[in-house]
Amino acid sequence: MMKKSILITGGARSGKSQLAERKALQPCGRAIYIATSRIYDGDTEMAARVAAHKARRGPEWTEVDAPTDLAGALVSTDGDQPRLVDCLTLWLTNLMLDDADWQAETGRLVETLTTQSAPVVFVTNEVGLGIVPENKLARAFRDAAGYVNQAVAEACDEVWLAVAGHPMRVKPNDTPF
Amino acid sequence: MMKKSILITGGARSGKSQLAERKALQPCGRAIYIATSRIYDGDTEMAARVAAHKARRGPEWTEVDAPTDLAGALVSTDGDQPRLVDCLTLWLTNLMLDDADWQAETGRLVETLTTQSAPVVFVTNEVGLGIVPENKLARAFRDAAGYVNQAVAEACDEVWLAVAGHPMRVKPNDTPF
Amino acid sequence: MMKKSILITGGARSGKSQLAERKALQPCGRAIYIATSRIYDGDTEMAARVAAHKARRGPEWTEVDAPTDLAGALVSTDGDQPRLVDCLTLWLTNLMLDDADWQAETGRLVETLTTQSAPVVFVTNEVGLGIVPENKLARAFRDAAGYVNQAVAEACDEVWLAVAGHPMRVKPNDTPF
Image 1 (cartoon, each protein chain N blue to C red):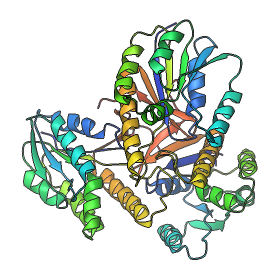
Image 2 (image 1 turned 60 degrees about the vertical axis):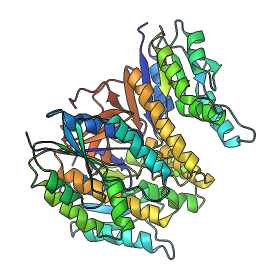
Image 3 (image 1 turned 135 degrees about the vertical axis):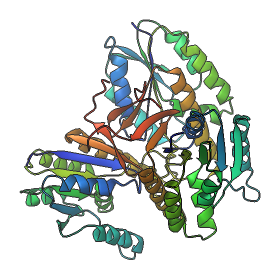
Image 4 (image 1 turned 90 degrees about the vertical axis):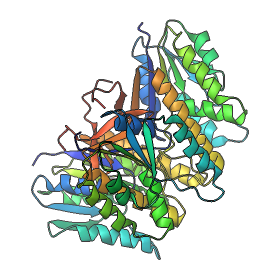
């Protein structure tokens, strides 16, 4: 199985997760799902969203939780199956809420990627295309999310933007810039 | 006239409506404008926006209002002219404000599309690329809007993303995913 | 040096500025940086952002400030070096805060572009792809930003959308619409 890393980005409900699932199952019909979601007490909305995602996935998936130690999860799952990481935005949220050094963790993630044998498909969110948020934390978060997306995109072989359920190729790009 | 359905999506003031008007007039220079806007009491901003759109359109347009029964409007206007639906996001807003079953209505719309002889051009909005809204209703709306966009995109022959007045092709996509 | 004008748009932290810097340095390895930022009293966040951008730029850059008179700055810097304007969104913000006629200024900018000998690379922001802001001023601003982006894109030879640090070509577009 060819080593490959793929980033799928897009807005809310743009079909990112379904596209990423397709990609992850392509090589051998089975894959490992690395969930970064951490359901905070009383967050029934997120619980429902996670349950809906889980219900859509069948027995071809093995599930692993990695709310913060994503690099560690990649190392421990590296084998004969692709990994799907869903998603970088929740992972960043968890790191920021834990007051962890998210820039260092991003660096560690990107370095770990170079050591992997099996493919990794990342899902992430575009959060920077609305009006500047009034809330200072929201501004810091969208800056951090843009930083993480750029760093992981740089390290990936392919980057796709999901729009209304369809993938637009961002990288590699045939058009000379 | 070839049966064809086209979805044009994009952000606020990205030139979606003008691009859709061009597409709708391409086959025969005349078209039917299906307006989904419903001006709520005192909403002078929306009234001004609708008036500006109307002023830009000339006598080659016939106007029909369909704030909620879009499938019905497509059936009753199917003939020798393309239809332009502007826009799905307002239609969804109206359905949600009326507490209608917007998922069922989306299903009915998509089924109706398969029965049409004349082209249909849909305008819609991308609303999911900003920071997660703090308001719960806003989050529910952006999820619903993403759902509608995906369902209609799936049913359409072409999907375009408007950026700064220019169309980027989303579907069909020559790049293997 | 070929006259050329280029618009690079994208979300927050999408890599727009770095892409624009690459473009501006391509012809001769030197360029003029036209900064539109105006640091309002006490805005330490903007001051830090401007400082970070400045630190990344080396001695190949000459800096010029033009918070509002962008057309004038283009005229006075037109010579043997490309200009990088960073960014249109801050320029629009300044004009609106000054109660200036931003539509007239946009018209003047677009006309001035046609008189230039050296290239101009513009950076701008996409701010219209989130949920409709509740704040009326924010809505007016995102409409104005969309207007400016469309007007400048129309006048430019090339338009690019930055996504996760990578450029997607918007114009010229080989795909027939």
